[in-house]
Image 1 (cartoon, rainbow, N blue to C red):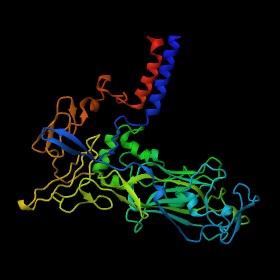
Image 2 (cartoon, rainbow, N blue to C red):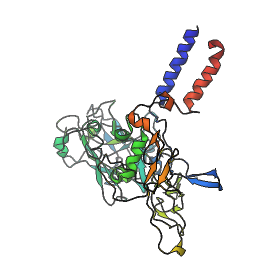
Image 3 (spheres, rainbow, N blue to C red):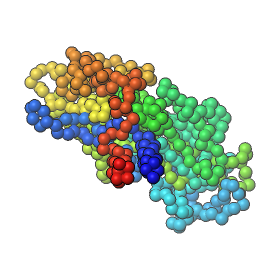
Image 4 (cartoon, rainbow, N blue to C red):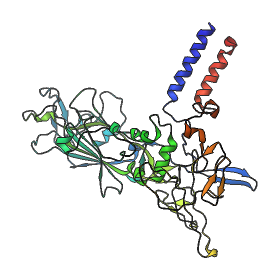
Length: 460
């Protein structure tokens, strides 16, 4: 009996541990911009890097279709099932709500039956190409935090390009190409994200993985954000310090996951065969039931709140910063050049606050932000920065700052600011170092403690 109870608790612990596996033990949520601490001088503010929570960004976008009259239903038309060209009992009529398929149905709540979806006009003007641009705009810089997922109600397109803009739609760059035949469609060899590495993570690829013809269980297209994160943070995103360090120091990588607009270019609908059936063109069209885009407002690690007011997203800036992205110092707080916050050292980061202007001392001293030396993408930083000081860039874990150029760390610690255990680099941290165990007060320990508390009269 005791053995069976022990095995039950062990199984519960394994289950809880496996559920927690995808989440790093030291994640660094950066959900607080400042907190009050007590020092020898009394109560003072301790500033730290901060950012808004990741959320569903489709709630805040504006959608635009080109050509504007590409949505079906005006005039009403009948369309056929792709798998059966003789099953033509579906109608699209913009004047009847039950039969209309407007663009906003790409972003409504899914889970109802039948599902709701946007639909284009059919390919009745073949051989003229049936092409549609779907532009998603936020009028705000956002940082992507999860995969972009597009769910098609019809077959996935034979050819498609996902594009991004960083300047509110003035210029566009490809994010990824999709095709049933990459070489024929875009003169590119087919690849998948699994073929990339840390050094090639910014490569624009063409994939055939998501462009098969109509299949009941094959309606989804992905743009893999988390798989690209995993090149730096590991397959379970546990080594977030590495990812944050790369995002801190490599502008090209940071910009890769940053957008103001996305554009879905549908170039050729799912045909399902080698040739287009010109006798049954009503079976060819585009239909999208859902688009998912998860991310956060870009606030340069100077805000935890992003407000949506008058159809516009704006950061509520801290650290004496201002602007839509907290991208400059407030008036009278320009005592040193503005700088974004830094994710490092984990878990609080570095605030890089704007400090009061001091006009009475003549020429102001130069300050620089922290730039950790992380260069796996072969991007170097030419700045000669102060690594540490006694104001904001404190050495961690008992380290001392030596001439503002390096931290002298205790024997057990290493890193730019003594933020890492030395045994972690050698891969020799044992159970005594706390590696692999959930942090105190974690849901896993609380759950296990509750079970042990219940079971203790039987076990002991």
